[in-house]
Length: 529
Image (tube, rainbow, N blue to C red):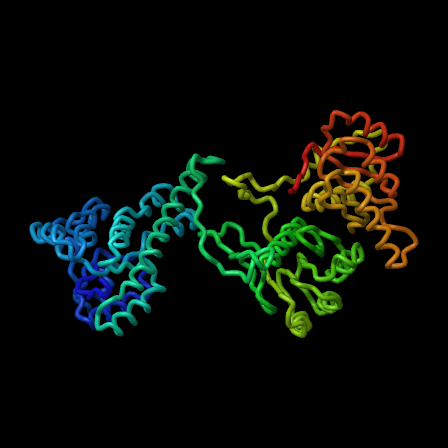
């Protein structure tokens, strides 16, 4: 059937937003209103005639409202196929009247969990009758209109007004699609709570996952790929997806991916002084802490002025005019900060294509969570890398212990290396990266590339020597041979931080001792593929 005249509507909603306007439109078209509990009360208070569902079914609500719509009169009215002689005869034989419109939204389960409710209250907010009715109506969308969200009320009102109290098949199909998505997401939230919060499972037998569309993107990593941003039902820790875009072009897939990498790294310094991270293709190309945001930016920029062009910049403190003026000297895709003052915003506004994202806060780098990666035929799932450096677990393995400054540089380099694609080597000195080697197939090449970049930076800046001289070097995984460590020593590093655990640790330690290096083992690696 193309158009179905709405003669009876059943309304049962937790969210009362827009309810009275919808009811007024239904009444204007002579629709009989059937309702339950608090919804019926709200409609009557608004002056509408309402028939209780218990009057329709001839069966009282019971068990604190747990049983009220789970009845053949209700589901027969929703599931009966109009125009099917057998169905229509069964409805007539059993006194089942058709229900043409179902307006239902569900008990606020996710909101109840989010407010920290006790287990009994959470269980009581698992809706049973609502999802059952929604699925019945959505299955029979050729005959029944189902609405699950207040945002769709206006579309229904306009449809009724334009079609003289009827709805068309196109709208009913669209609403049915949303209805099944709605119940799927609702069930996913419940299953997630039972698996993770209630049972403490790390990897449940079935991984409940429901995401809602945040925005469609222009394209993916490449123009021939399609892309979109999806958001979780409940945001545990706001991140780049929740940042407020103040200005600039629409964010692309690559912008979001790189911005996320930048925010994750700069958040490692959320409790420290001013820090700046510059990212290109999801790898940091310069990281620094300083006495001010502008000082941190200029130090990070000096590490690799070539890669910084067209990069992503993230800082851990609000931007001011001085920092904005420095940042806008070169082309930058995205700038991320907790906030920006009026002077900074005015300077950025002159760069129409620059995207300015304000996060309000920094994510907690130690927060739990899962990361997902699709592979052919499956999905890899792991806990996110929230490992932090255990100061008590650090083990000096060389004859010479690091000085206080060397140890501080080791910590800094290690923090950055965690966010560099493997194989990763990071040289750092005085809270500034000196050279970064990323994504190589062997650790020796990463060490050499990082040293070469440091020499190049020194030549461009006119420094007397590269900043790898007297630096600390971090390796995201153990040195399988002494060659990578010796390359770092040749570059001028005096201290090394690495996980340890190689079968050749003794050889590497001996090489470090011979070169006069201080070396500490962390016992933790940070592969990043």
